[in-house]
Image (cartoon, rainbow, N blue to C red; front, side, top):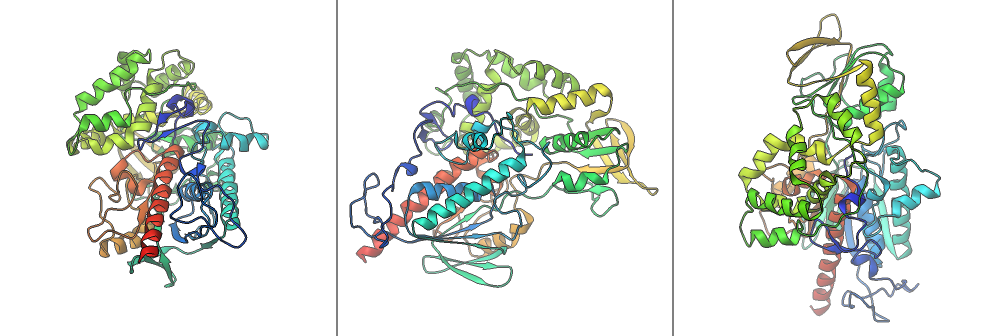
Amino acid sequence: MSCGWSARSTGRCCKGFPTASGRRTSATASSTFSTRWRRPCPASRTWPSATAERDGLPEGERGFTVRIGIVGAGASAVCVIDALAQSGTCGGELTVFDPSPQLWRGRAYQRDTAVVLVNSPAEDMSVRQGDDGHYERWLKERGISAPFASRAEYGAYLEETAHRGIAALRGRGWLVSVVPEAVEGALRGAGHLALHTAGGTAHAPFDHVVLAVGGGRPRDHYGLAGRPHFIGEPYPLAATLPAVGPDEEVAVIGTGLTAVDVVLGLAARGHRGPVALLSRQGVLPAVRQRTICHQLRHFVPERLHAMAGRGRHLALRDVIALLRTELTEAGADPDLVWEEISRTGREAPADRLRRQLGDVDCAHIGLRVLQLAVHICGPDLWPLLSEQVRQDILVRHHRTLMSLCCPMPPSSARTLLDLFDSGRLRVLGDVRAVTPLPEGGFAVTADGTRLTARHVINGVSAPAHRIPLPARRLVNALYAGRLAMPHPDGGLCVDTATSRLVGSGPANPGIYAIGDIAGGTFFFTFGIPSLVDRCHDIVTDILANQRLRDREESHA
């Protein structure tokens, strides 16, 4: 279900590569703010002043207190907590709101069967800005050497990182608390925010609030909720798949990473019956190739912004020309990349899987350079495209983009290919209907054929760029207070440089959004590296604004 890309194939192992927001980072140096505010906090709480120089702290200065609320306690929240802890900032208040029993794990990384893997190598899963080896070291310390760890293991990493970050903050004088309630309301005060939880309690004041509400739940496209033998939420697979008998027919709605997880989970349980994957286009995720190290030279955010100029949109032909230059100078053949793109959806799924497994160690690096360009530059490029171009991509090319840029591990692909070859797995496109049968089970109409299945499992990905159902009351309150605006492509409007919400009223006191809820602006919100980059932007902006606010108050 999770989506990412190879760290080395994106250039994250290379020094000085441009990140999605145009910053430049180093593989050996800490991030911009993690190299600052390093002097330990004295026991007397004489913290570094907001007026201190950012790269050197005068002795004897008093610090500021920043009050931050985080709505949601999944992977995004962990990235924010770690960024705050690494900033070295002393003295503050942090309150995290989440009613879930899966604190710090979210839906994606909850405890589950070991067959459910992360889809990116370890170097691409670090939550620490500027330290791509953070997660790798955690794995090695525990003797875990698999190229793709289980998502449950990654969830344990998130938990431990959150706990260590909270301990570090408390050690610097922070007051940190977790409120096990959902936030359903927000009100603007005099320079601050008040949050209201489901129990009716008001929590205030907050100088800054981060909306890290995660993704939604899978959409029930065929209205099957409540029907016997329909599994609407497949995770955790360890709890849902035991309901499926070993020889029973299964139809899985979807052909993305979640659907692949379901198939792998069934296979691991010894399921012997036929399985059909159903979707409109019948396209599986691509197979991840071996990692490489490449640094983008031409297709970089700075160049894209310069080409667009002020207030203009980039022409798609200019974007393609720049990408062709990047590919050519990397020693890749652009025509082979275009061929791979054009073959998506036109090749039999098993044939495509077999071919791509054979290309895991391919010397042609064009697809990996393309993946790098999309992930590093996507959040910057998307707002520079015209509405017409964005809609064309969403309508005509979305599945191709997701397939190529969110690939599955080779081990997962091998299992699927074995199932194809045994005749137990098939993929059907052009799904027209999935309907319950009076005698039990379901009838499926797809690819011009009709089949029956005892069980239907909803394996579609959670709808991206949408407001998750548990967050809708809060978002409606933000709309009512003119603190937020809906984005025409879904989610909320945010500032591209800081991820701060754009409202229709006066400037908000500091509300930020991260993840799918900001997908209308960025589109490319998937993957841990994207979360880390966005959290870097958010924490940098929070601390800069708090210094400014503290300075203004001291001069009042």
